[in-house]
Image (cartoon, helix red, strand yellow):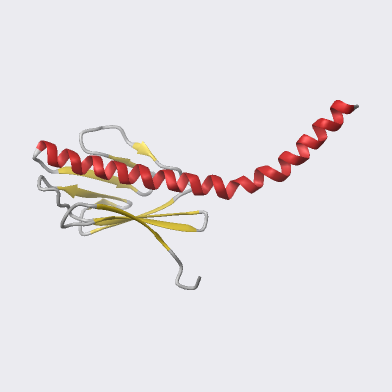
Length: 142
């Protein structure tokens, strides 16, 4: 009887606690996706600098994946994170675009916007220097 009571209490506690973790999980997934994209962009820039030739970062918004210069593998991002890509003119197809880094470190520039759990983070790629800047966008109303 005591064992049954303990299992019922554990089940009730799990039913209350688990739904409260969903926003935290979505927030962690977004934070991880932002860091993955920023790291891949920095890697691509580093490839352009070290090899002395153009290197391309490709983001597929529809498939939630990206590819970096010198690697054929497509890396996935969580589907719970909404992605947007803004570039000058390197859209390859609907939902897919690229950012090109040049041997001097500069780039075509652009912006990757990620949204999840009521938060919005932006990864800016400065065209002149190729610098990767992460920032959080806050609502004007709050």
